[in-house]
Amino acid sequence: MIQRSEYLNELIKWKHDKLIKVITGIRRCGKSTLLKLFQEHLMSIGVSEKQIVFINFEDLKNEELLDYKSLYNYIKEKLIKNDWTYVLLDEIQNVKDYQKAVDSLYVQDKVDIYITGSNAYMLSGNLATLLSGRYVEISMLPFSFKEYYKLNNVKAKDDAFGDFMRNGGFPYSAVLGNDKEKINNYLEGIYNTIIVKDVEDRQNRKKEEKKSIDVALLKAISKYLADTIGNPVSIKSITDYLNSNNRRVSDHTISDYVTALQEAFIFYSADRYDIQGKELLKTNKKFYIVDMGLRNYLLAKQNLDLGFTLENIVYLELIRRGYKVNIGKLGAKEVDFVAQKNGVIEYFQVSANVTDLTTFEREISPLRLIKDNYPKTILTLDKFSVGNYDGIVVEYVIDWLLK
Image (cartoon, rainbow, N blue to C red):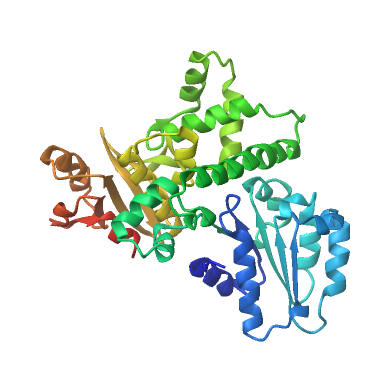
């Protein structure tokens, strides 16, 4: 199994804490493997096999446990008296009303609960109400470049980064080398499963009247968002685009489908932030896709649009490192990312190349206008401009990703 040490350490940190550990993330990003790694860790420190209850709800042998009452009774029979029982429940969203079973287990003494799910909708509604204040969410993503490079370090880091931009960071993709046909077939399977299973399941669980999803429309929206990463997008702009292509659809439907794609962890959004007024702006978010290989599969592009690809990779890396990320607005100028963590702000510009003086000035001028003393960085693939410019750091992005 491929180690995901940062996520594993996060689980270990929360062990025995009276909170339900909820691991979320897109399908095939490694959640099941993480639970298995955690199980191995527990046994390595002396926890007996009888103390661990592991159930994968996508395994047919566990079909009888898809009823929450049956699930609760099954686990309750396995609880160890006067010692810890570790309950690991994989793809829990397959169990209708699972939160009732989880809540009942939560109140038992010395029960440590870990659950995974492939749709953020599982954390809304009843679960959020029933388990409010009782869970911590650990958001999981496909491989970072640092993790990818550990598997592919027989290549120079620059060459490995080129592969990473094209093939993405889903764990299985990372071990397929550069076999484009195999990678595309694998990504197609993930994508279609998410669209048909996760999004449809979300729609069916919503309280309002159930309606079958328009798969063609959902895929059209996916392609539009994938093609416009790094650009301001509104629900109206998506609706106008589809209407211009003879797809008559309402803003409400578009908004609902965009939310569904976000809750399935295919897309992440970043709000615009007024740096001077220190407030979030309600218009024109930017969207970023969870994996560049998935984007390249959706768009079937022969050439990378390097600047936006790089921007997407940096956005995901900031999310991995625990930052809350917004798009900075400073008058008529823009800062790519305003990243906040633990009360500290960092500003980032991302540009493929800044050797051209006009490009360099365009990237650095918004940072010069910011008068606070928080760190300001330009990330680039241009090695020749690396340095410190009156406190603004220009850094080689591959080195930054490998930190």
